[in-house]
Image (cartoon, rainbow over all chains, first blue to last red; front, side):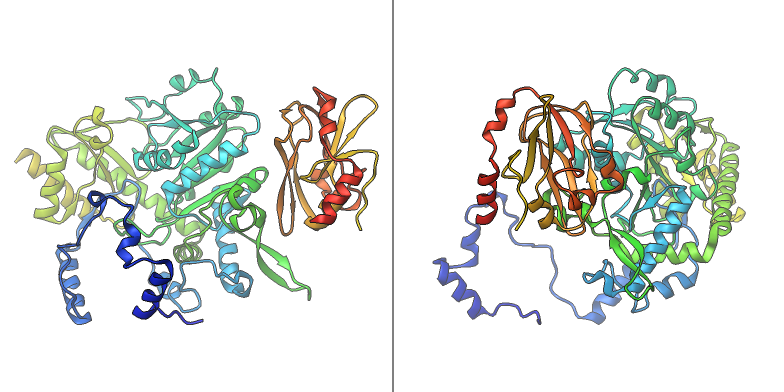
Length: 454
Length: 129
């Protein structure tokens, strides 16, 4: 059926049928002062050629800045083949197809994606993705409350070292379901979640403990101790991890005595380019025992009537078209296109390639950290091991420094940590992925040195 | 025509409740309900020791095409669950009134059973549907 908008005549007929004079009258109930009125600053229409030129000019203003900014989204090299293949007509869609089983290629791709993620995380099951890292954590919290049969609690232990944006998104999504996020402080020397402070919660009942790895500061948490503590306290554990780091570090399925129950995170490092606000994609894996509480779509492999391999949506009873208001989630859409890119990225790099990217990112950040620390007026904030980010303290206003380096030298110096952690003073978080060279690092360090020490 | 034994009571949400000799109430779903659901693939059982109110949802049965909550027909404490359903949920399809029982409640007040339908009443209900 073609989409045909209503003609003026259609609209008039509909209005007269219900006895209303104009479309505006339908909105009478909304008080005048709540309406946004005319959009005065929207310029007149332009043709395609003009728009293209305008936006090219604006894009050029960004230049090609040298990026040392991370804080949740990271610049990694993306092989040209990734988006060449991803944007082929067969794959070019953001959604799981509505007639899912008619698109066996898409389903197989999602199945391969799930297999790769489950393997990278050392978990039993992966879903076909979620919106982004922050909402994936919110979904993991909701899932843990449903899945923890040993606890009646609707409280979640949330370390302050978890990405502050993830924490606020999670809060916004779960607070009206009377789920409470309880802060767990961090050790000011190591930058890790404070195990002694955590121990004080042992007497209380919690549905889950969130365990970031690496944490927001780039610092590696004591994931074994945290996971084991959770299991011993009948609290489910939720890992929130950078998938790239898992190519190098112990995967969540092997943390502690039991492995985590649920792991989620932001998939952007796996082949998705940096863009302000995305689109990125979230991922989630869990233990087999929790699979019926997992939100989102899951693709399964099966055998058809002729004995041939086929792929199918599975465990759909969790989903909203069957369970209605009792579905595990009403976010069942995945980010199919980004997942396609991630699957191709992972298959091109393979486990060894991913590990090399992770290792080179770690090495470059170590190099950057040592070089910055050699500058007068730059001090380390934390002393625990890091993955590929590092927080440094300066004697000068960080926001101003970031602006100066960006405007005058086209360097994105990093993330102003103080905005979320005022207790850390003038703190800047830097990141050097595998895409940074020694020259890049030296350029950044020398400009910073010149700014700080004239 | 589904089978509706008259030794037990029925809820209009399609559970059956059988008062046993020891005073406990065994609960399952009716033959009519299993027919409507089709092949069952999973039963989410309650926890033994859990207390339930009459009408509380405490279990879920899932077929290939639907998932349906099971409500406790009486108030009390769940003292036993049918673990065998974890591996063979099809027992409900094959034997809704015997092997396919779901849980046993130790009731606080057996007179709650009087509020449920008898076999004739339930048979009328499903014929009217």
